[in-house]
Length: 381
Image (cartoon, rainbow, N blue to C red; front, side):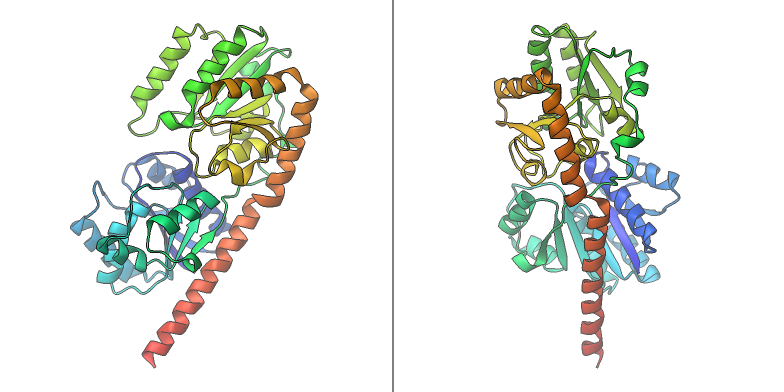
């Protein structure tokens, strides 16, 4: 099966990295996948490093006549069996190109981020009517798609993102390597969060919690794993300055982007996930797979992933006092940390393994292409 993925984002975060991960999973299952991305973007560069076949389109607004024409020519030349876009904004380029290129291939849309824009007007209706299936990564995104677009329920499929639990396996990593790298002592409790630098991820709440907890406990260290993406440098600088203002410079570690994510997570004692509104939360799944007890926001996509009191402690959204209280419970109890961590990995293996995700995705692909081929034969006859 020949598939074209599209992701014309210039940013680099969960959506973009998961797009790359999915192409690799499909390659392992003998699918031919090519990627349409923004030229020079992090996604484009990472895909080239992996030797993936890439095509580019320079899109900055919704309607791009030149890019639509270029894509329609590509569609005619390649004759893909299926098109899968990872970004709803791409539909403005992809759908007209499919029409212009006389391409009847099924069109999939993965929805990784919710929208508060009503998309039931005439133009959006034309776009979404061309979508064969929309994949929602969580219950909240599924509901959002149905409420904000003209897609019917039978066109929206719930499919949680998955991770490689063999790669994210705590038995394969030692906590000492990263702790030695950053001079973290054995008696110190390391609390970390992993996210790109954008306001909704809860960096300020994490810093506020750190400020309060360090006044009470002298054996705590804190770590933020991640980097600023496109347009986020100013906010990243603000967060780092805030750590200095709170006199936390000797307590805080900013690792930047790390390719050895499982290794870094292995060093943590507690994982914090204070995101205000998360469609899913792949970083949380990765931490859970590494048997890390977590404290996370009780909202949105987190509710699909974590079970309060079983795999993690949940706190009320934007309630820093509740956040601090839940962190403190884990700081005080090594036994509780171990118990929650074991349950967390068990849940990931049962629900969010990449094998489960890939098998379901492939099953849906075959269903769509078989239906498409059958319909085409009926029309031709």
